[in-house]
Image (cartoon, rainbow, N blue to C red; front, side, top):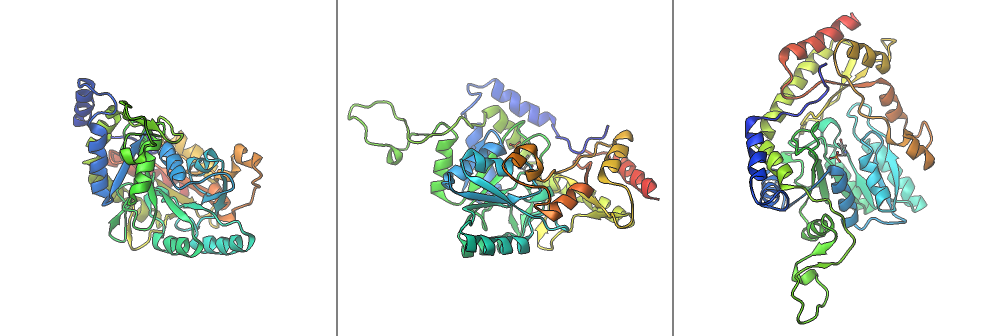
Length: 386
Ligand SMILES: *Cc1c(COP(=O)(O)O)cnc(C)c1O
C-alpha cells in the first residue's frame, strides 16, 4: 500500500537520538534549547517554545492570550479537531468560518461578513485560528487588517506549513500574527515522533508559554512572589500549567530533520507540480495557489469536478484503496463530529465546507515517494476517468 504520507528517517537521525540515549539527559538537556534556537533562526522570529505536540502548543498559546470562560475562538471549518478543541480546554466557546472552495483555506470575505454581524451582536471572537491547509499560507495580511479593525488575536495553526513562505517571509515569523504553531507528528513535514512548537515575537507571551509547559513553574526572580529571606529553593509555581515538555530525544531527532526541511519542501513541490499538470486534463481540481506564497505541500488534496462525473469521493477512496493507493480525507468539517453536534452545531452550517467534505480526497505525497509509485497513482486516475 502506498501511504498518503510518510516520515523520512536517515542514519544521522538515528545517530542523533542514540547519542542522547548515551548522554546524561533524556529530557531537559541541551537539545531542546538548541532546537528552539535553530527553529527561531529558520523562521526569523525571536522565540520558539518546543512542546510535546501541536495540540499542547495551541492550548498554551490560547492560555497565554488569556482565553477563558465567556470568550470565543473562531477557526476554519475544515481542519483537524485540535484547532478548535484548544478553545474548549480553556472553558471558552468555539465557532467556525466557512472555507474558500478554491484555496480550501478560511474564506476572507465570509470572515469579514461574519465579523460585522458578530460586532452587532456583541459576539466578536477573542482569538482567530487560521489554518494553512495542505501547507498553503492563508492571506495573512488581510486577516491581520481584520484583527486590527475588530480587535482579536491571531494564532496561526501552521501544523501543515513549516517550510512554507508568505510574501518572502517564512511561516513562523509571526509578522501577521501573535503566535504560530507547528506540529512534528510523523506524518507532518519534519518529525520528533510526537512534538510541536509555539513561536512568537512577544517576550511576555514566550515567557508565559515556557512556564505553562512545565506546570506554571518559574525560576526567573522578577516573576516570583515575595519569598522568605532564607528561601534556598529557586522556583515557584505561579500559575496552573501542565507537563507539556518535549524530551531531548525528540528534540535531537527534529533538530536533525530541520536541516533537511528546505530539501523536503522542494521535493514536495516537484511532486505536487507533476500531479497538478497531470490533473488539468481530468475532472479533478487541485488547490488554487496564491502568487505570493510557497506551499510546503504537507498533503495533496484534489476535489472531484462533480458537474462532469457521477462518482463520489467515497467511490474514489474505495477504488484507490483497492489499487493499493492509501488515499484519505482531510478533513471532516469539525462541527460535524458527534461531540460538536452535542454542542449544538447543525448540518449545513458551512455550505462550502460540506461540499468539500463530499468531493475532496488526499493523494499520496511525501519526499521519498518513488517516481514509479507517483506515476502509478497518476496512471490509475487517468484510466479511471477515461
Ligand atoms: C496535526 C495537526 C494538529 C495537531 O498536531 P499534534 O502535534 O498531533 O498535536 C493540529 N492542527 C492541524 C491542522 C494538524 O494537521
